[in-house]
Amino acid sequence: MRSKVTDNPSLRNALRSAHFSREKDETGGDWPFRVMKRVRVIGPMAAPGFWPDFERLVWRLAPVSCMLALALATLLLLNIGSGFHEDYLGTVTSELDQPTMVELLGLES
Image (cartoon, rainbow, N blue to C red):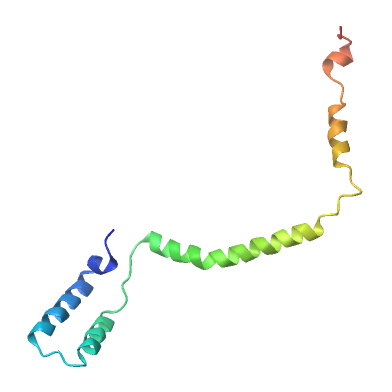
């Protein structure tokens, strides 16, 4: 995978010219500061396209989505009754006791 430095030609050219100027000139104590000043003049690298913007949006929304999911799950658990007065198994067994067509027509053997 290529780095972002090699994909940005203006940054690559600036770093290359700074490196070659180091060999020609005397390198004083302020040389790194001058190089970084030239790099800052170029500005931040912008990755054009849909996916970098989408990735940034997803990572900004991920903590909010997690907190919202936790809050809704907590509300759901608090609003669900204890279930001791409800007979869930009775509901299932009453569905099983419904007569079938064979029983209604009396075709049992």
